[in-house]
Amino acid sequence: MDLEPAGNFFRNNLASGILLFLLTSTWYFPDGIFPAGGKSDIEGIFPPPYFEWFQFNKEFTEYTNLEECVSYLTEYITSNGPFDGLLGFSQGATLSALLLGYQAQGKVLKEHPPMKLFVSISGSKFRDPSICEVAYKDTFNVKSAHFIGAKDWLKLPSEELATAFHNPLIIRHPQGHTVPRLDEAATELLRGWTVDILRCNNRGLNNNYDEMENGLIENVQKEPRTENDSKEEMINANAGKTEVEVLDAAKA
Image (cartoon, rainbow, N blue to C red; front, side, top):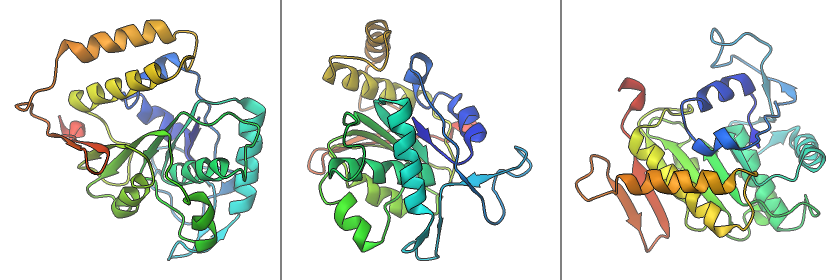
């Protein structure tokens, strides 16, 4: 499930191939429930109205409508689920991580099965200590992928969020606060990440699991990675994370 305030914008960018298993999975795209304040970055691309999940102060330590938002989303997940994972951009990613933490601590979604995967695009942690003490108390044992832009104003907060997860996959791109277009190497890495999730779970994201897994394994093994690849893939065993650098696919 995607949690993103500009649903049409996000759905169109997902078509660039950011996650191949989108093609064989059922995804839900709830929109933000509060009118967006200020100027929107997608004005001129998509017509209004524009929405957001919550409002916050400059320091990102005080929030308006956050509790209402969490209540709305937990009810949405309970009513439409169960779901296998969460995917979000910016506010959506930040909220998704919050829900994962709250669920792990028994604060929300007590009757919902634990989420298996999480994809963050320009996500961050909340900074209110009362939230942090609960949501980020323990390391998240959820398969996670984190897209971090070199020019994103949330680059450092996105990196901090990734450290809250066990063995995160980090995909760095040269763009800013946006849903990136991925090159072939990054797409192949995501295929491998997806196969790993498929192997770790007895049941799939849908009924096409076996067919999907076989196809992904074939694609991953077709062109094995070497030290001479044009992409620099770094596996940091000490930090328990995998990182990949992405070329500017938008200019390719």
